[in-house]
Length: 475
Image (cartoon, rainbow, N blue to C red; front, top):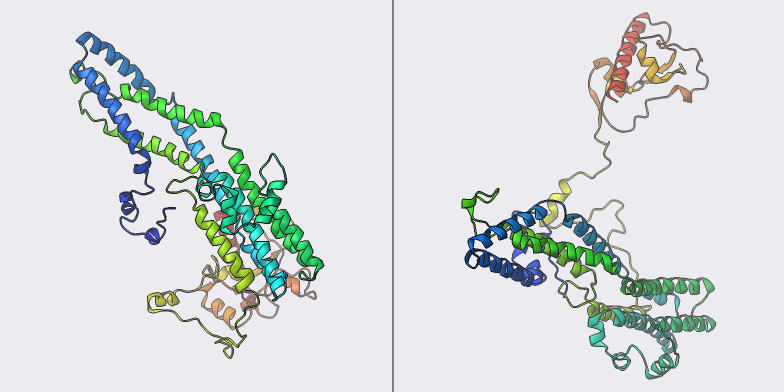
């Protein structure tokens, strides 16, 4: 059974993942403990052999061999990380692809329930038979690739006994000789039966029949994809390269990581610790990584984390028959909903989730952006040069079209000469382009007749130049 721990990691808390380290079923310890015991046994044998069974001259020779092997284990002569990481990534993508290719009848049963009509026995028989054919096809393909399903249905007679196939259909199935897998035959029966339902008027138009065929082809494509995943594996040479790289690396570690006599002054051998703690950790990580690739390369076996194919078969046949039989035209009375008379209403919260109502709704990343009032002037440069070239001329006279802020909000901000405006729409900002009657050669000055206002406007325009120049410098 697939090991699920999703609920235990729903919330981040102290020691959240640490609690998962003490599980046994589906754990790395269960996959790796035999290999680790073998490695420790071999390492212990060479350690005792070096310490107690060799003469001093033989010990010198063993030490030179150990130092030589250690050179290769401490460098990148054996690219274990590269080949192992790429292999596990490839295996994981393949594992996820096989899961998403599992044929689920949900879409197909909705189309059958909505387009194959008839509340009589004939209509019910058509709908149930169509979905039985679809499920039979998935059972046949899973029986070809999954050891669990094959043990459950070792022969076609077991499939007949389970109710996926009748005896007449079995005779028809076996009468057609083919050298290849015949999982597609029930889907052909499905298409022929759907065409007959169209002739009988159970499927009311060609559009509904086309919809049935489209969903059937999607279902068939997933069955075919599972078959090809089982047929075409990751190239054997790559699997061999990864396995040889990992095990040869630790074969050298068995000798190269031995603790030598500290009295002889070898480099990095000043302490005799007997137990190679870090070498054991390295073995745990690298070999564990290889075991992960070995586990997920074929998820249709009987490992702890392999797919629950038998449960999926049970689920698919049950929901299929419920959708096209028990739920066909089985509708509750249509009544007005609870909020029928309320134009604005809210959905209640429980006490455990009431705090979520205090959080403001997200309206966009720039919704709370703040701008100073001086950057809200609308002006249009009449110089055809680029803005960067304009700014290089310090306060050079440029013909512009200018309209001040209008409205109480804009006037209040201009009178105070300071403040900020929260981001949002401001209809009172009017572009000169929306006034076709405006003069073409209007300079950056206010309307004539107000000399005092002219000087203040010139000061404001100078501030605008400085603000725009600062903005371009920041960009």
